[in-house]
Amino acid sequence: MMNKDTLLLAIPNKGALSEGTVALLSEAGYSCRRSGRELIVHDKENKLEFVFLRPRDIALYVGKGIIDLGVTGRDLYTDSLAEVEELMPLNFGKSRFCFAAPKGKYKSVKELDGLRIATSYPELLKLKLAELGMNCPVVKLDGAVEISVQLGVADAISDVVESGSTLREAGLEIIGEPMLYSEAVLIGGNKELLENDTVKRLIGRIHGIQVAASYAMIEYDVPRSKLEACCRITPGLESPTVSPLADPGWVAVKAMILRKEANKIMDELFEEGARGIFITDLRSCRL
Image 1 (spheres, rainbow, N blue to C red):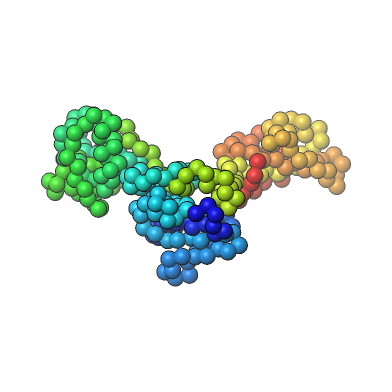
Image 2 (image 1 turned 90 degrees about the horizontal axis):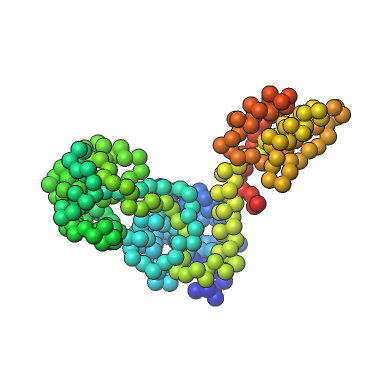
C-alpha cells in the first residue's frame, strides 16, 4: 500500500483506547472525529483515512496489509499473533499483564504450574507459559475473568491490570512480576513505513506532543544584577531568551524547563529576586 496517496489508519472504535487515540490525533492536527457512527473518516488534507475497528481486530487487518497503520494495545497485537511492527509507543492506556490468584494461596508463579488459568488473552498467555516452561490448561474467556476463580472455572487468572482494584474486590492478588507492560502503540506492517512522508509527519507531530508534555515555558522579570544567577537556574535548551524592559535595571527572561521541576525552579528564582514568574503549558514542540 506504499504507493497510495492516502494511507489507512485504524482507530479503536470504542473504549478508553478510542478516546485517547482520537484526542491525541486531534491535538496533532488530524480530522478524525466522528459526527455519528460512521466507520471511516476522511482527512484529505493530511492524506489519511481513519477506519474505526474493534481494538482486537486492528493488528489482524494491519498484519494482512489491508490497513496501513493502526493504533491498538501492545497486549492486543501480541495476543493476535499478527505479523506487525511496533512503530512508536503513544504513552497512554498503560497497563500490566499479570498472573493473579486467591490472596495468600500462592507465593510464586511456579506454584501455578499445572493449574487452570483463565484469560481473555490466550495466545499471549501461551507465549508466556512457554517462556516459563509451565504447562497449564488455558481457559479462554471473553470477559469478567476475575470471577472465574470464585465460580470454580479456574484456579488462577492472567489478565491486564491497571489499578488492581478489580482484582482486590474479587479476593485476588498479583503473583510474580508482570509478564508484559502494555500501552497504546502505533503499529504498521513493516518498518519501511517509517520512510513514507505521511507517516514521518504523523510520527513527528505525535512525538512533538509527547515531548511537550515533559516541558513547560517559564517567564519572569529579574534585576540585571541577578540575571546570571537566574540563568543558571533556567539555562533553557540552548540558552534562555533575555529581553530588555522599560526599566533599564530589569530584564524579562523566557526559557523551557522540565515540568516536574517547575515548583522547585520557581522557589529558587523567587529567592534570587525574580518577580512576575509564571509558567505556560506547551501543546507541542520540535526540539
